[in-house]
Length: 209
Image (cartoon, rainbow, N blue to C red; front, top):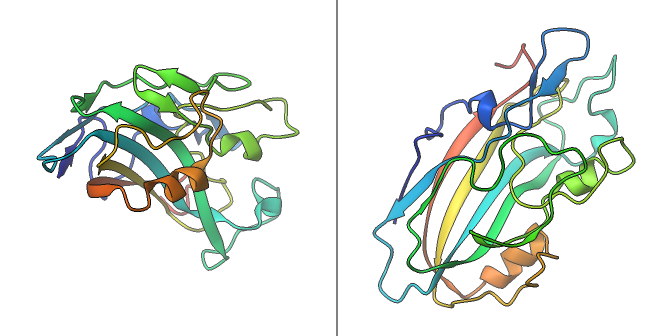
């Protein structure tokens, strides 16, 4: 498969237009980004493809987030890391070969967006739901929400946007979008015919950029 985008370039920095937050340049450290979901287009899907899935994952998120965004604290580049899922879309029809820019998000939505059926099949719950729990922005975050790594993190974050060609019309996940990244990973097992990805980078730490 081949994956292209007019919004993202492989191994290049992601524009803040597609990020949940951006460096603010003042003592607030970050401000809202454009949070616009990127354009994606794919081709050369294998014979027998019956649906597609899209997953956007950041494997560079601190496993211990207690120091994230804390004054006087620094998250070391070699600190333990874990996956953070920014976008989960499954059961896209086999006839789909492109997703328009802004189709899954166009701006930061206070309190999140509803998961479930959309023009992109079924969109699940991303990990901002957990990250923002207990904050004024608490809510269920469905669909796309872009990069927002801690401003005090010494590591450059990498965002893997992967399109999977699948041998089934449906992964059998909840039609109301009540599923998370680990659920999608488990459901993909044994159904992937091919895949393609773009990896973008992002930071809000001016010392890392």
